[in-house]
Length: 185
Image (cartoon, rainbow, N blue to C red; front, side):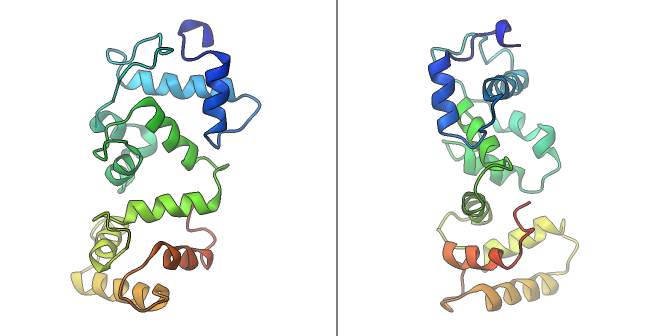
């Protein structure tokens, strides 16, 4: 596969490897596969020769159609959080970052940080009751009544809000998920 296009030279591949958690002996092949995945989403937009780092952004609609995101209720938030433009349109670097953080090799703290950002719908660096309501509704696919959602949100805030300010900081969130080992899987 590496001969079919020109993704990056060896130095560039090492730089990408250093800034991701996709650290395997077969990293060059993995990076090329991810480039293939990116290019396959829009071959008309992504050139075969990518060594000059063209200014390409794939639209959110293409990113959201990927099997890894297609059925995820948070697909739009995931794309928004990992995209440089905040709208879900992704450069190749954004795409690599997303897969790096989602990999099993990414540190738990980093996964928690990005989960926090994904659940912080209003981007105010806190998960407030409104953010929690959106999160619960997405997780349950709106199967709970508004009263049940409110009850769940109040329970989460009561149990996780360490400083009793009515919202969850990143520290509150990290503390909460340390008590739920499977949360970030």
